[in-house]
Image 1: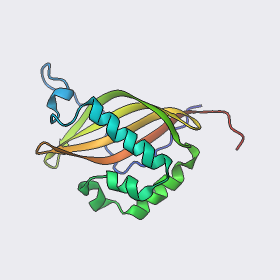
Image 2: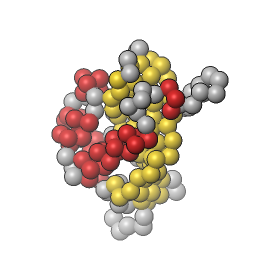
Image 3: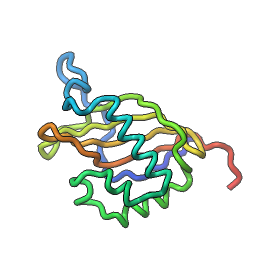
Length: 151
C-alpha cells in the first residue's frame, strides 16, 4: 500500500518537470551560489531543525516571500501533523527540477531520497530564484513505505 503524506507543503506548486530549451541543464541556469553542496547544506539545516522540533528555526529557513504568506502558527500545525514520519534519519540528493517562471522568478524543486524514522520516502524543497538571489519557499515530505510499527 502506498501511503503519501503531504506535510510542510507551504505552497502547492506543480510537480511536473518543465523541459529547458536546447542542451542547457537545470544546474546551468542557477546562480553560481546554488550548487549541489549548497542544496545539501539547505537540506541538512532543514533536517537538523525539523528533528529538533524547532519550528521557529524551521520558519526562519523560509525566505521573506514565504514568510509573507505563511504564519509560524500554520507551520507549527504542519510540523505537528508530521509526527507519523518520525525524524529524518538520512537524505541523499537525487535531482533538481525547473518548475516554472512565475511572478518574475524561476521556481525549482530540490529532490532528495529520504529515510525517515518510520519509513522511506522523499523530501522536496522548493526554491525561488530572482535577480540571482535565491530563497527557500517550502518543504514537501512524502513517506512511501511505512515500517511495520504497532500503532
